[in-house]
Length: 361
Image 1 (tube, rainbow, N blue to C red):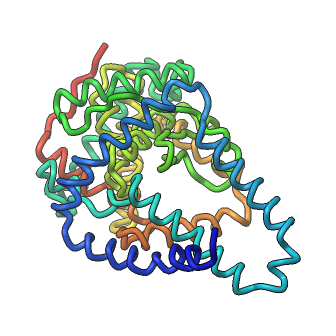
Image 2 (spheres, rainbow, N blue to C red):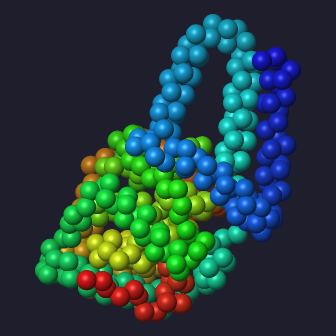
Image 3 (spheres, one colour):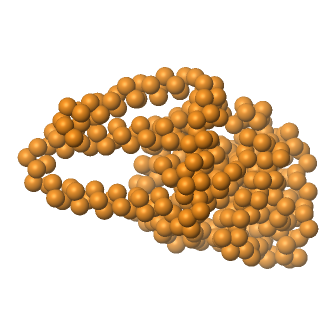
């Protein structure tokens, strides 16, 4: 590739950034022409192309790029030692191509209309509304836990394999599409990540590969949390980028599922976020509500805490900081704290649906 072309591609990152920031001012345009126009066709093609493959194609591509890049840099180290400007230009060139591909393939979804507006959910709530919703979630979580175990002190053990849970996730989306057609999930591509150990040390439950459109789930996480993570990653695959939104979609698909185990996982998931929010705002209320939770539910929460604690390491905060910066750079001002903003969507949803889904035998 000639230097003039390389320079042009590298410099193109500037107008790209300007264009993206301009599009961010027009979420309705992004929603209509990209998120509901171009993106479903683009993503659907890649899910059709790679969805049938039993392993993660994206993980192989990432691994190959890492190895290939290191090999290239080692071979070219003498040249770059003497030509540091060329190295800088080549790095910017790669970033420019990656930035263009990322936004074309998936990234523009960060600038679409928020799901709260799409589903007509009120995001503002009072302390009383939060308290009442949390009480209802405690009731339903306890109810499901006793229904499954017949013992309030016994933890729930979800008896399915991860492959079965993938299938049940797809079934859940089929059911949910009857209520919310915009969440229909066609051409599924849901897989275990080949980097599950690395993801665990980084503190992540999964990720969407924005280039192959495979939903990757960390195969090491306990089954207690696995279903909602599956729902979360498919939410990304459907074109919802904001973390609070896909947290909500993961909850929505499982709480409306016919399977009691997945309902339990969903209620406990939403409850943990609501309790965390109450603890931040009113620790006294938190203590009162905590005392109403069945010991068996507490055992499941302890299982999850023990799992993540076993993988704590000095680099985890570094990875979280990088991801925090990435989210802020992509229209999520709260960064990694945006995960917690799912609470407003949960409260808003149950304000419209005060009777939680009935328990299914």
